[in-house]
Image (cartoon, rainbow, N blue to C red):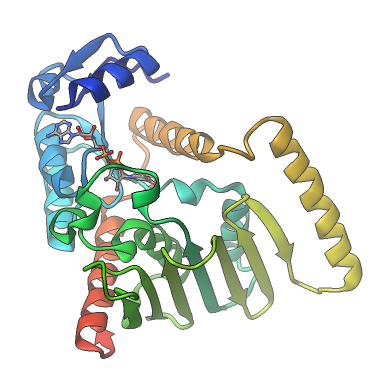
Length: 319
Ligand SMILES: NC(=O)c1ccc[n+]([C@@H]2O[C@H](COP(=O)([O-])OP(=O)(O)OC[C@H]3O[C@@H](n4cnc5c(N)ncnc54)[C@H](O)[C@@H]3O)[C@@H](O)[C@H]2O)c1
């Protein structure tokens, strides 16, 4: 069991709200004295450019850290966090909760068991609203604080999933960027990743196109389509036929109805975070490997940086 014992925020209103909502007994306007409380785990949810500093401070106080994505705004900074955690013998985990979408876990399990054959390609698409529409935070629009636009914000989740299936990336070629030319950061990007072990991944992220969030994983003996938006497995394609499509459609109706009934359909995010936090807490207690190791976060950030380099230099970038 995890007990929430303290919360820190510079903003008194945000601090009071978090303490009230989550019934946290101890509050701090500065996170540093909070770290003296000998905490087992610190969950870091400050703006991106502060992740590495706060994480390293917490690690140096002997705490395990769960860091909101991205682990840091650059791969080098993230590597410093990883090295500090190794030196202090604590565990780090980045909040990549999309890995816990049930349909995605199922497809990944089948993939790693070899049921889908050899990887051919993965399409990872996420189109959503720009944070302007749901947050007053200004740091999102300053690349020095956010680490970039859409590739840094939601692209990093998909890069993590692409690496999960495809492994290390050898080359990156990207197009798009500040699509309307008015924002000063990337709002719509497509990037082709060539995996070192074979196969390729297409990252397609946009804050301008209509809503879409899915992964299509193509193997030599199967295709999995994962609807990340409603968290349903849309189909497995081992031997596709009108009958199997109908069976899948009926299954989707059943799963969606259950999600509407238990309200998961309207706000499924808390369940994903809950699953991630449970896994992480269990790893800490039982000395298991981190569910999302820091090395994986560093690798994803190197890919993010290669995408940005490819965009600015208009060429293919080797990693
Ligand atoms: N995993 C996900 O899907 C997901 C979704 C949304 C946001 N995020 C990440 O969560 C983090 C926070 O995003 P947000 O939208 O809540 O930002 P926000 O700006 O709304 O909230 C950040 C909070 O941190 C506080 N803060 C800033 N500096 C601080 C400091 N030095 N000490 C203590 N508190 C400090 C601010 O007062 C504010 O309350 C970001 O890293 C973002 O990328 C992740």
